[in-house]
Length: 160
Image (cartoon, rainbow, N blue to C red):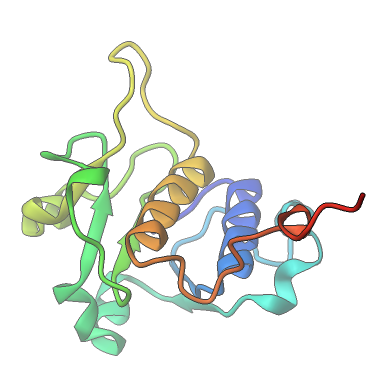
């Protein structure tokens, strides 16, 4: 929601491409998707990810009312650790802008759906794209990594 740093969004788009997830961006964005920084961070993965932009949060929920039942909001203010909840295969993960996180009214509205990544108290937070990767892969792990390859090239029989 309202990302400000194009490189983070490019990295998140790359993560979405790798796992087959769609990326939903809620405006305002702090950049244009055509900026070289977004494209460079996403490398050649942009054609492998579905990206949808929304004018605001209301527009998103109007098009995806089901998200209200299956959402998780990442915030340092959360009452739950991200590993203590159950993610369904249809869940929606929300992340806020780099400088302010998700808006307080949204957090209060879905207080019991807020999750936190544990970290030391004297640091503010993880980088946005790293936070996305942490939560996304926990959700995937809980659902058995559907559609993803679990074995790399070295997983077969070793060559003598």
